[in-house]
Image (cartoon, rainbow, N blue to C red):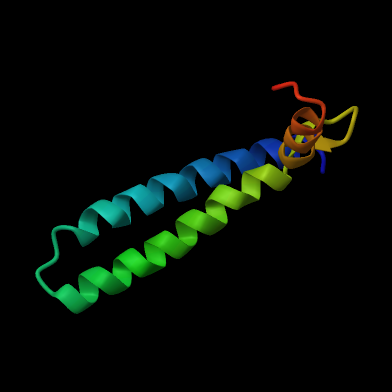
Length: 81
């Protein structure tokens, strides 16, 4: 992944997080219980997907590490990043 693509992906994730927060907040104001629960379910699924995705993105272009591999390596050796 090129640096420009990485920055675009991080911006997209920020927009998606904001959308999840917006729709999660709107769901609380709805009168219909069925609609409120369905919107919250969709928001929760999107939140989990969006939460996992940054762990697969590179944090170091030169070394090729992702956040998940860096965390796993630090836990293996008993050091926090």
